[in-house]
Image (cartoon, rainbow, N blue to C red; front, side):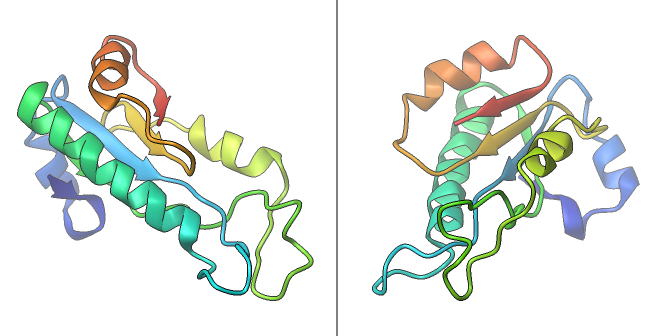
Length: 132
């Protein structure tokens, strides 16, 4: 795995473009009751991203380029709670549709973990973003 923030552009360019896959996690910074941290969704997404990276590299022969998480997404139901951060609904969609020269992107989000191997394999045939 290559850490995007710790790499130079030449580090990224040195990897065969057909093998590069950008892995980026997205999750809201929002309340989950008084007993859980505000980063609960990101923590779940980061764990899913670790699993995706393993499948990509060990089973699909890809090189994962790990981007920093996107911490701020729409959190409409939680925006009134102290510490919760909400951005306009279009913001993550616009960020996700940006062009990446690091390869197709995988976005991990909160929610139940789906069978990753099948979804990763299917998504590698088409450029763009995969929601897991």
